[in-house]
Image (tube, rainbow, N blue to C red; front, side, top):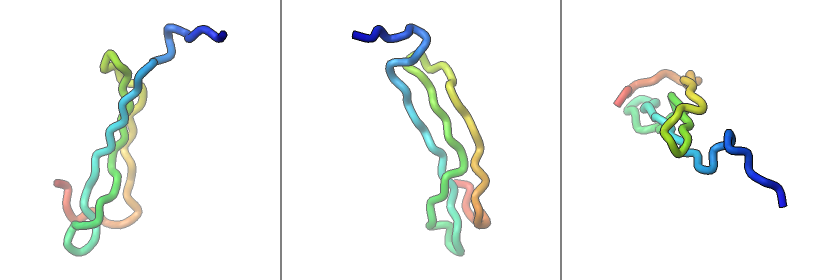
Length: 58
Protein backbone atom coordinates (compact mmCIF):
# COMPACT_ATOMS: atom_id res chain seq x y z
CA UNK A 1 0.00 0.00 0.00
CA UNK A 2 1.27 3.47 -0.89
CA UNK A 3 2.09 5.78 2.03
CA UNK A 4 0.89 9.38 2.05
CA UNK A 5 3.51 12.09 1.92
CA UNK A 6 3.30 14.35 5.01
CA UNK A 7 3.73 17.42 2.77
CA UNK A 8 0.56 16.68 0.84
CA UNK A 9 -2.55 18.04 2.61
CA UNK A 10 -5.19 15.50 3.54
CA UNK A 11 -7.96 18.13 3.58
CA UNK A 12 -8.35 21.10 1.25
CA UNK A 13 -11.02 23.83 1.41
CA UNK A 14 -12.13 25.84 -1.62
CA UNK A 15 -13.68 29.31 -1.40
CA UNK A 16 -14.95 31.42 -4.29
CA UNK A 17 -15.91 35.05 -3.86
CA UNK A 18 -18.65 36.21 -6.18
CA UNK A 19 -19.62 39.56 -7.70
CA UNK A 20 -22.82 40.58 -9.42
CA UNK A 21 -22.98 41.17 -13.16
CA UNK A 22 -25.77 42.08 -15.52
CA UNK A 23 -27.99 45.15 -15.52
CA UNK A 24 -29.34 44.46 -12.01
CA UNK A 25 -26.29 42.64 -10.58
CA UNK A 26 -28.19 39.39 -10.16
CA UNK A 27 -25.84 37.25 -12.29
CA UNK A 28 -23.31 35.55 -9.97
CA UNK A 29 -19.78 35.56 -11.39
CA UNK A 30 -16.61 34.28 -9.70
CA UNK A 31 -14.07 37.02 -8.89
CA UNK A 32 -11.65 35.25 -6.51
CA UNK A 33 -10.58 31.67 -5.77
CA UNK A 34 -8.73 30.50 -2.66
CA UNK A 35 -7.54 27.07 -1.45
CA UNK A 36 -6.37 26.38 2.12
CA UNK A 37 -5.28 23.20 3.88
CA UNK A 38 -6.40 21.76 7.22
CA UNK A 39 -3.99 24.11 9.06
CA UNK A 40 -5.44 27.14 7.25
CA UNK A 41 -2.20 27.53 5.29
CA UNK A 42 -2.72 29.14 1.91
CA UNK A 43 -2.24 26.74 -1.01
CA UNK A 44 -3.57 28.87 -3.87
CA UNK A 45 -5.08 32.33 -4.31
CA UNK A 46 -6.09 34.07 -7.52
CA UNK A 47 -8.31 36.89 -8.67
CA UNK A 48 -10.55 36.13 -11.64
CA UNK A 49 -11.37 38.85 -14.17
CA UNK A 50 -15.02 38.55 -15.20
CA UNK A 51 -15.59 38.73 -18.95
CA UNK A 52 -18.62 40.98 -18.50
CA UNK A 53 -18.82 44.26 -16.52
CA UNK A 54 -19.31 44.00 -12.74
CA UNK A 55 -22.35 45.94 -11.52
CA UNK A 56 -22.43 44.84 -7.85
CA UNK A 57 -19.30 44.24 -5.75
CA UNK A 58 -21.42 43.01 -2.82
